[in-house]
Image (cartoon, rainbow, N blue to C red; front, side):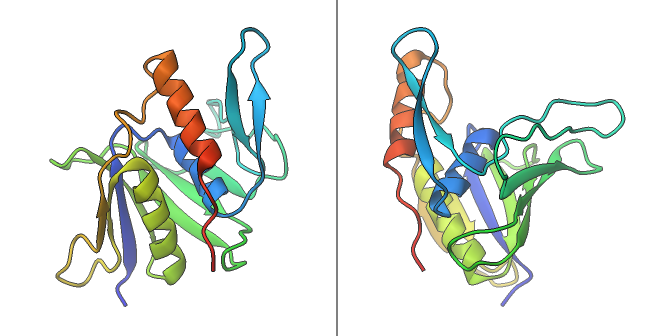
Length: 179
């Protein structure tokens, strides 16, 4: 097996949405939360870090929501964060991945680098099915795209109310991965 499983998602995948989808794929509880004004709702995923305001000393402050099993942590590089998965229902192990949200690639993707394991391959496939993109299960072989999927919606962005509502509905309907 290679050193990394590389997950390439459509460039319009937002980091907070990706961490929420990771939470859903790993079996975290989700809730429909009504907006205080209007009749809309959003999909809230339990145990996922939701707020990370900037701080001049540390870079990122974690605002606790629940017992966050899935967190984003600052790194020394301005275009990279670590994704820390402390507990999950898939393999019950701790995992670290790296999110590069600015890459010098021609194929308009963002990249998550996880360990070369079945966990990252399954998670990568689930993320790619939701956001569009491809997974390279083994970065040391000659196959660059072991699994590929087109984006299942017009956009992953929240550019209009209709885009936001469709995205939230897709998150709500998403099922966890199984062992």
